[in-house]
Length: 458
Ligand SMILES: [Zn+2]
Image 1 (cartoon, protein in one colour):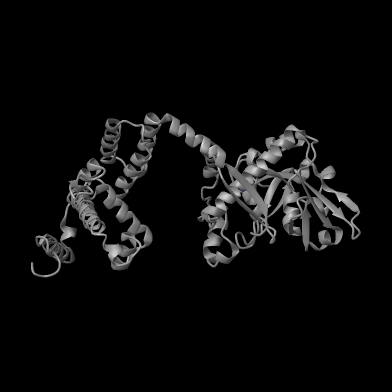
Image 2 (cartoon, rainbow, N blue to C red):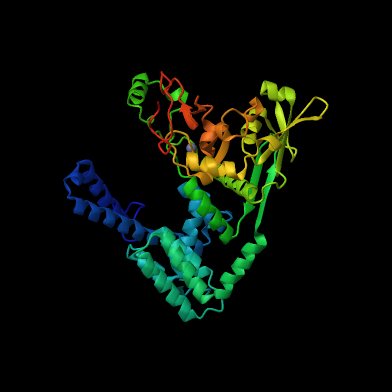
């Protein structure tokens, strides 16, 4: 075997390959299933340690390619390009291997003298099978960010500290340790990067021709943290209160649910992460607009939507916001149900026929009474608190519904968006918000109330 191409140095790679074949033979014979749990974990750790030690073999081979300027002799722009071609690697993977070789692989002085690796402690730990490739990358990027003014002894101490941390922590956490070290050794650098964050901060919401908006920007660490603190919990997947009508093939299951009167079976949120974050952002904006309204009652509305009387009658066509953006009339009416939005209805010539806000705005006393009565979203099974709810006109303002307690209920943004499409309807029975499920949830369409209000329906 030693005379084959593989293992030309000492036959080591050939031996390793033989050992691996032998092991895989045992594995296919089912030897793993006879291991105890403890032995299986030990096997897993040993395999990982070996995988990590192989990274040093990689680094040595790549470093040797670099030393020979192999890629250059083939008229290739870089060793990374060479690796992509020879090993069929992605550009990212190839670049990472070249970078890893620069950190952990052998180096040579200009006179050909062999030098120790750039980060000798990282290299040694990897040779021991302790550090993963990602650990090494995180440590290298931390050390790279140390300013030139840091004393060599401090840089060595930092590398030691990080290598020690990497023996116990995952790469992300090692990165956090690295940030603390940087802040300690280079406080000005951290301050500078804050100034840099402040300089680069931006945010824009740009109307697009289709009627939507494109948001983009770069947030400071503080702003991003605040925003994520708010959005993340509210963008968590919510169990839908009901299945969509298209998924409701199983009639028997529905009958069971309605027979017990229990809330329909909870199914997983079908929204993507991005869609959930978007909805949480909408909730935030709505909350801010509504709270401003409560504080500064009578302040001019920020959003005005106009439509014509015939659009209102047909529930069709495009309404226009005061920003000049178009949105469909049904969507505008949904928005107009939130008191902070003004709805203007004009005739064909543009004269104003109705001014929504004057009629619809709920007073502060009404809002407090609603909170006292509904105590949150009144949709059956929903537990959103009042702060996250909008005032919903049971008989829409456009249909002549009044802004009175007996025509209002609190409803969360999610249910406001979805209840109609899912076939639910709301009415006030004995002064309490009561929801009528669609046929596919309860063929008898027996009314339901939110558990906070009461289970009892007479
Ligand atoms: Zn709700």
